[in-house]
Each structure stands twice: as structure tokens, then as C-alpha cells.
Image (tube, rainbow, N blue to C red; front, side, top):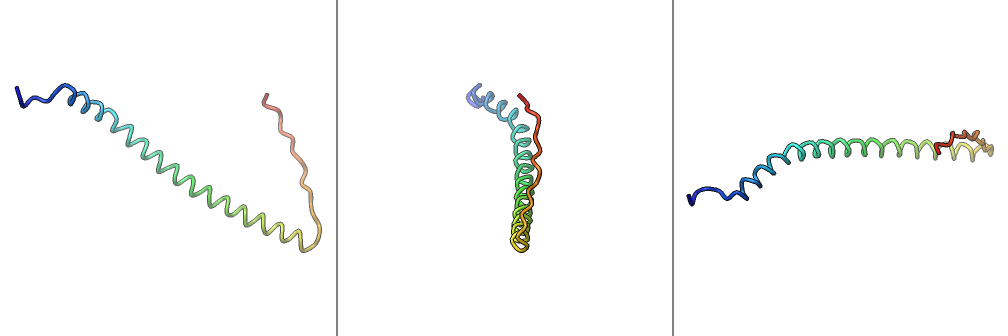
Length: 76
């Protein structure tokens, strides 16, 4: 009877087995979020470059064009 594992060990093993799929899913989600962040960083960079180019172009001819304001319906 000395070689038998304590019930606590069995419970921990069962809990570990139940958590393994969750860990796998969370790691996959984390990896996808990292990819999404990298893509968003690239998009923001492109937008910053385009914005800077537009500012420089506006400075060169001295004309500032005001964009029309689009009112969004209230969600309240």
C-alpha cells in the first residue's frame, strides 16, 4: 500500500489534465493577438507617414482644407 499515490496527487493530475486544453487554447489566442498587434502597428505607421506627407503638402501650397464633420448618431 506504500506505493499507492495519495488522493491529492490524483486530484492534481486530474486538474492538470483538465487545464492543458485551456492552456493550449490561450497560447494560440496569445499568438493571434501578437500577430494582430504587429499588423496594427504597421497600419498606424503607414497612417502616420501619410499624415506627415499630407501636412507637408498642405504647408507647401499654403492651403488648409477643412474636412466636413460627420455627426454620428448618439448611442444613448
